[in-house]
Amino acid sequence: MHRLQAREILQRHMPGMSSPVSLFLPCRRVRSPLLIPTNATTLIFSSVRSKKSHWPSHKRECKKRAAEILDERLFKTPPPKPDCPICFLPLPPRSLDESGFAYHPCCGQVLCSGCTFQIRSDATKGNKPCLCPFCRTRPHTSLKEAMSRANKRIQVNDGGAFEFLGSMYFGKTHPRKEGLRQDQKRACELYLKAGELGSADGYICLAGAYYNGEGVKKDVKKAIHFYQKSAILGHEEARHNLGAFEQMSGNVDRAAKHYAIAASAGFDNSLTNLRSCFLKGHANKDEYETALRAHKMSHDEAKSEQRDKARGAYQQMKTEIFG
Image 1 (cartoon, rainbow, N blue to C red):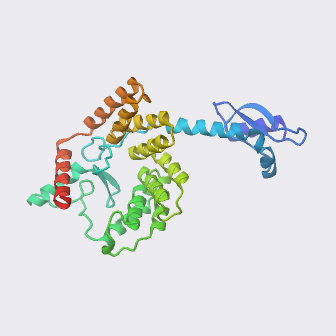
Image 2 (image 1 turned 90 degrees about the vertical axis):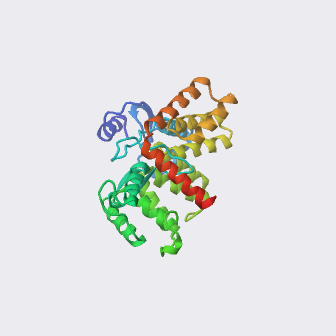
Image 3 (image 1 turned 120 degrees about the horizontal axis):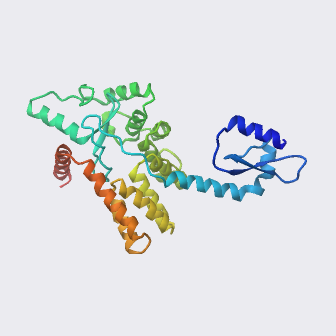
């Protein structure tokens, strides 16, 4: 393959590339790969045999560049939180002891606990029927009905529906006594599809399955890989877990970066760990103060009277059940 042919291929398949990366092209006339200065971000080979024969000569550079690209994606600002379609406030930060929002398979919407609690509270008092706040459909009364609604949402490639149905098969959403046979392998397939459709919850559930060896063979590297995918999509708990992995591996500086991003999104445990990193000198004062202010702002933006009532009712129910 000649230099002119290589440039024509690049212009045809990768127009407008701006980040300069070396392109290695094997040529029979030259013993070593041709280094062509061009704006390519991939490697092009004339055959699989050429790729294998020339791989050792640029293996180190390729792996280094791949790690740089991953870090660029991993540590950039995560996407903003979506709003609740009823109260139009940002969805509350995720927490390890409670859920501030939930997916509704009837309409495929993610609604905050405050809006759902208000409807149920009015229904309990006898003022209004208990309906979905968004689509005004009655809640499902059986596992079969919930699965039927989720399957309808799956037909339109709703990532939340794949994750919802996967949690059913995994045994997280409903107990076994309701008649659904656990199928963790099927659940992991649904989690993967959910993640591919943009569900951060799908990826973190799949990461947990790989970490614990549930439904799939235990593989910590794959677990970290899917935690990274979930964190890139904006999942605070996945980001926190990545920080914990880095901290256990001795990469405390990288752990502090993960904790700072998760704390800025409102994750309480990450703020605690970031404070510990700051006191030990692994995070500077500006990073900690910025994360602390962003953490408070994230909670203030998502605060409402209805959500506070829902949180109080949840804590009361938890106390009555577990003591």
